[in-house]
Length: 136
Image: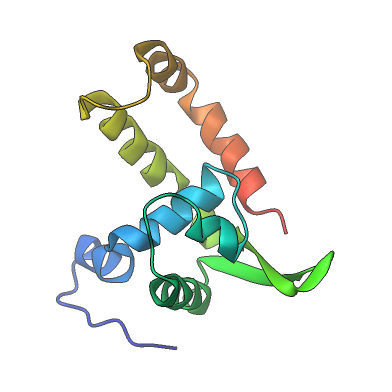
């Protein structure tokens, strides 16, 4: 397992050392919020992630037990990625990042009604996403 260079013993610092680059959170977003599970789907997400970066982040997330990959039953050359229980614990963080961005990005595609609906049902949405994102 690759070593994470810890800057301090602060829990926030550790979290950022492990998860703090934009690509890692976009992979987690795609699994948890966009129901994407395959390498090709992550590449096609729209942010222009390089293949070497994607491969590196998937490997790191697997090594640290945040995601799990399994050979896809219908095509053994493909791998299906899902969140582990440890990874599913990050869903509330993703929801908070989504909410903050929806509130403060003047160009957000999220309507005020959608934002209000999501906020009113946040806990049930989180629980549903946790179940779905862990399915193998």
